[in-house]
Length: 110
Image (cartoon, rainbow, N blue to C red; front, side):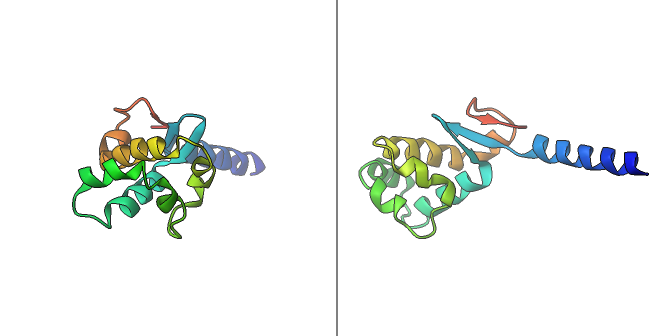
């Protein structure tokens, strides 16, 4: 009985790890759900997504101080190039379906 429980637990953990998609940006790893939340946060305010992405690098401080920003991104916001990284992540969030099928190199865990 103990063996069955251990094996079941092992397979559940392996399944959870294999279904989790992570996005790598530089030295940071984010869950796909966090990247989608970032994309929703940035694109929810403005109808013009392209215009918003052009301004995102300049206003990275505003995005980083937003109360709805997922905690995963706080260390990224401390870097000088946070704006460029946020732009890449928001672009990836806009095409998250492609990430779920591992079309992007930055996405792992499929």
